[in-house]
Length: 229
Image (cartoon, rainbow, N blue to C red):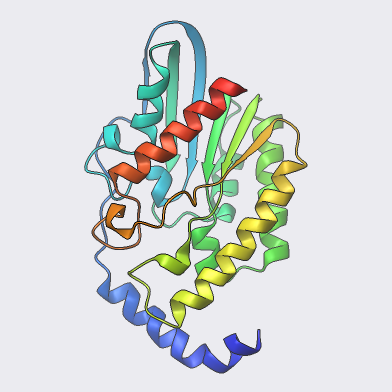
């Protein structure tokens, strides 16, 4: 906290410069709802922020959604939906879910936290919001399994200058630990660690989002978690 207070004028300036200088990549084209595959019916929802939306991929086929569905469709008849937008926080997704009519999903995959870290929401409030999110997914959307993706390693993101990278990276690591601890104690919920590579060459051109290879590895872990469950 002391380091943040001392460095706050520098961090504010770096944040402004970073927002202006980092290229804003678009969300990739591709269907956000559909049905494909053969076998056991599986209703899938992917929910969250720009990473869930596939920013950094050229098409949804290369993004998390497309690669998860691709891994499942040989054994499942997958009915899938993507509800994700650039800039989404846990709070904005909660508002979205509260405004939607009830719908049943077998599996929900979430990707949230980076925008909460950068918007400086308090850790206690964020954990409360995440717990409420999981409750709504179970009670209103009858999710049998929730796969909660952890926070990526912001301390290694090339788009972030120092000391902003260090401050946000430390905060993201702390949030990631909290989330894993909370999810581990939550029934029918799996924490998925997405800190599986430090190779920045696999990131998108903006130095902030996953590239297709990262999405492929992430999707493999999601599909394995579904199969194991």
